[in-house]
Image (cartoon, rainbow, N blue to C red; front, side, top):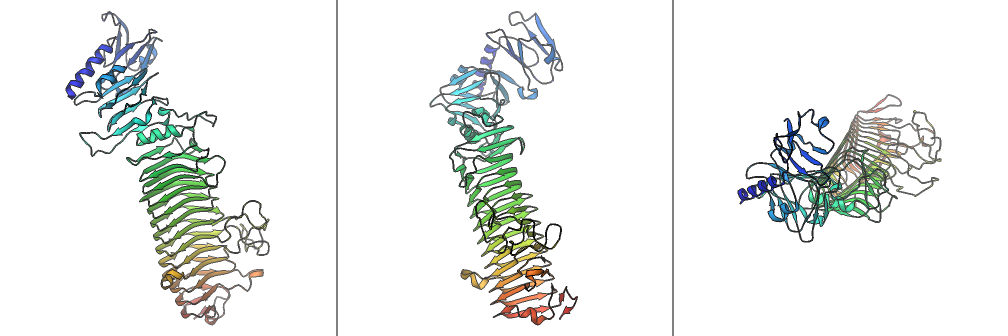
Length: 595
């Protein structure tokens, strides 16, 4: 059958060729007398008069071809793309063939140069390269399907090449190799997107983007802005990657009344090298809601979206070089596993990550700064590794500030009922200190005293809060400028595990004005070689670095405190507690070793 189809295709090509060319090329005579010239790679081309082949009109080497041809000739250059050129397609090629096949064993190219109307289903075989030039496009009629076998290819510019029933264009597996992964690239412009600079676009690009990602595995976004004002549904049949032309070049601009702009169920999706921006700052809007799939983000910037990524039961997240600004919650994850954050930055958000019932979470070389909520929140999670992070609580817009009142109980890191966690090499800070009546200890230059405005409330800010957590470590972190550096407390539903088997090693607690460590109902905790540096300045001269109640089996070994004269003073900080051990304690104020 394929041999017969090959013969049909070659016969059609011969009929269509009104001219004769050397060097694996062909011509098509137009009504205006113009000629389309398709040339091969690396070969001299001679164009002959179609009626008298003995009379050459033009001979040119490949390097001279573009400058020596007449103005009436349009050149289509493609180097090696047009290898084994087959012909220029007309309506009849589609209507009669049913399958567009280059040959039995070879790969070949077909060119479409005008608008074709297809009224019956056609399959583009895996060895076909379909090239659209000039006015070339396909209008798919009702009931007709256009199938592209895996391995086929489309070559087209940033222009509309599909119209009509575009939802009936699909990518299918190669029947001779069904195990091969599906792969095809597309542009939203092929389906009618404008991608113009600026937002003065009459029609939004949602439908075009939907058609592109439903059809292709890679969707390329040009430089410019794509207006999305309705929901785009991600396919479950194959993975799709949206690839921009650069983070500050390609933009997905969200508008209209949609509350969730991209929705996927079991979808594997990636966003690369682009900006995502919200018009109007809808407080309830979400960019992506993904259930049971995988998400990849690389070199993406998000602005002004309330809840950017909502992930449920997803099995993989890879986030690298992400920048998120002025979002309420950047990542809201529930029941997810294998989440990785690499070299990413959250700025001026309410929360960077809220994770519930998640596992295997890694964050490396990332920062979440100037937030007015909690940087990282974990509920019932395990397998958490956070290394070389910066967590910085900024303003909270309350106590004299104009605007909305957000969270008053702020934490850089909040963990509830979590286990198997490692927090290492973190900088956990609050840029602002307390309010007018609770002046911060130091300004940015290290000077003791209030900040110039003195209106920012931070009297309830905590660096790291562990509620009902166990089997974890906090090592080599700097936790500074909070009301309380670390809180450890029991949780009613997991009281037996409250603070069980947690080690604090080599941390620096600096300038936290109320308490460095505050524990309630904690047990089996070890502090080794941590530095508790409390200034005790002004109003806070009577503050103590430790506070514990109802604790058991807590050891402080090799710790450095400030302003204590005896071990008894430290032990007095724990009420209704048992097994509180102090050993090799140094007081930094006097230099004494408290044995």
